[in-house]
Length: 423
Image (cartoon, rainbow, N blue to C red):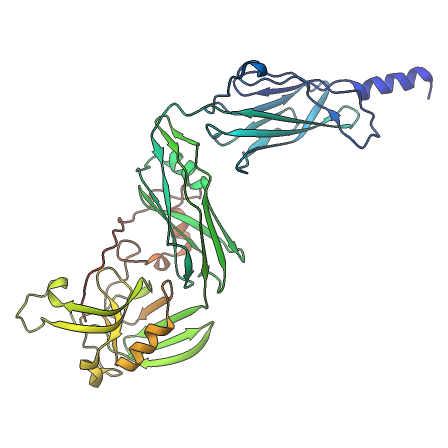
């Protein structure tokens, strides 16, 4: 190579790459005099500005997207990562020619961002620039707060995750912003999805039950994110729960027996009675909502007039609740003669006191109770406990604002109420 050619080649490597960072304002940058064989990438940007000169102390407008562009005659962008101080990454898209990168989701207000831009000049030499900026406070004071459920602890494999919002969100695009910010991570990893129950509540469940002995972490990245002109995301307390063994109890209204499986292995088979004609037990999958050692059950709480032939007022022990409307698995010593042979209850699953005590001690909140072959109606998906598992996976995904289908999937509001019930 001639001396002239060598110098010309050096000038190509040392030539600057023009990088423009725009968040309401353009920014110019120039490369340093690096060498293509250097282990350290050249400095791809020297001058930066966000919504005005950097040294003015002004803050970027979170309403405006982040954009990074490069002068095609000098080089191209190979990668951009933008992350705030809380570790929330800003998703974005890079054009095929490497000339432009832009964010595809809202920035958080009142946040500190670090942007790492990687470039490549016309000779293939790598460049890098680290940029930082702050976003201003939101103009609106209305906050959307999220409360996750259940409370921290260990649950059965049927326990859904809930997210309660303090304000309604009806618009599909706004729902997508909210849903995208609600993160559920499980170990081991499983496929799952949020489902909008109504304007203020979401449920999350996997395609199948949670794995046994899983760890599930739930958090929100919504704080400071613009949802609408008048609504911004607020802070949310993260949640961690675990699952125990897989416990599934299957009650058969035809055979009058309940079979309990633990991690796929049958561990007990119990004679039972279910709801008689006119009071049939609901079919389908239910989830244990809680356990009460003693409950006083009255017929008046389920619409049975006092003094009629069907009225009752009974002390009930070892009561495991599966619906808010009053279905339990409980001790029913008064019907022992019919257990295993006939359905005589007012909707609950009855068994003798010894078996009810065993069941009470061996199930936990979130375990699965499935009823088959009953003439009763199907368990409600929402509003009467956790009937989430009675919704097939395709329809469940249609309740997500991020997935294909109708995001306005029907669902009634869930208003948990503890009250006595039928026996």
